[in-house]
Structures are given as C-alpha cells and as structure tokens.
Length: 240
Image (tube, rainbow, N blue to C red; front, top):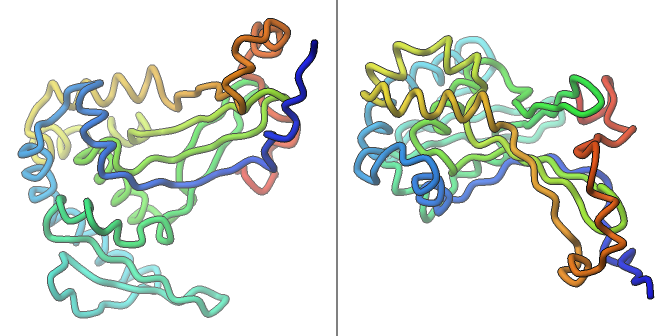
C-alpha cells in the first residue's frame, strides 16, 4: 500500500547562513584541525587582518565606525531601503557561544549553478566581507556554514552545505593562513583538501523516517542524483 507523504513537503528552495558554536567541536572531530586553545589563538592572530578588512568597508563601501566597547570592532551601514545593519565581532572567539553577533544579517549567501548536476555556494558580498567570512570559517570551522536545500521529490529534500572557504581563496592566501593564522601547514592542507574534494557536501533528508522502510521510494533517489531543480538556472534569484 502506497503512503502519502505530501503533507511533509517543503516550499521553495532555501538559501541561508547558520551560526552554531557547537559546530566547531563537531568538525574538530571530523578533520582534527585545531584544539579549543588553538582556535582561540588563531582568532587572536586574526585580529589585525579582520580589522584591516573592516577599514576597507569603511573606506570604500559606506560603513561607519561606532564605539567598539568590549568588542574587536563595531561598524554599521544603511541600505538603500533605509535599514541599518550593525556588524560587530568579539575580542574572544568563545563569546560566540552566547552571542552570534547578528552575523546572519551581515553576510549574503549565493548559489551558483555550473551544470545540470553541479552547484557551489559562496557569498554575494564585497571582498572585505567575503574575506572576513572565510577567516572565521578557517579559525572556527563549523561555526559559519552556508546552506542550500530544495525539495527533491515527494519523499525528501537535498541539502547542501559549505563549511570551509572556497579553494581559490585558500590557495590565494596560502602564506597568510599557513604562517600567521594557523601556524600549521598540516591544518592548512587538511582544510584545502576538504574544500576541494567534499565541498559543497550534500545529503538527502527524508521528510518522514517511515519512508526509509518503503521500497517504492528508493528509485526516486538512486541513479543520477543529485540533479538540480529546473528552476535553478543562471539568472534565477538564487543564482549568479
């Protein structure tokens, strides 16, 4: 007897950025990059570079300084619609555990479609923001993640994510990352290889766990997957 799982179907594709401080420990277990103390030390070494990128935002992209208080910096920008966005980062990485500092409002994800079955996830922000985002992904891998998901069929969805920076950015900033930020060539190679081989990673999620035991569903996710929705075309609102 066929089951009807249509009530669990989702709406249009979703593109977002998540912040999860617990994700750092999860990814440490997977790739073993840095210890907790190592993450904090790498973030401290990144202070000057982060502030340097913020200075570019103020000089060239219309952001303005505010009193930083206990934070590393505090800037804001008013959009064309009149909405003011504040951007702050803490002095210590551990502060993200209790305050995500509204980073989701600062960065804007982008999904690029290269072929019928290949996409990539990046940012549509100016270079200084892109650099800040990638630095945070390196020193706190698993904290900032770009997500993209869409309904694959009646039984579930495909979810993609990018945890590490783009390979081109890692290669372009090799010396900065190896000799200053990470202070460890092995960690750099691990991040670069993971970014090249596995990112963006994808996973099929069933809407209803019962469906995994229904043999008639398996043909829907076997052979040729992951295929992309026909709506995900160049020029679509989600794509570049």
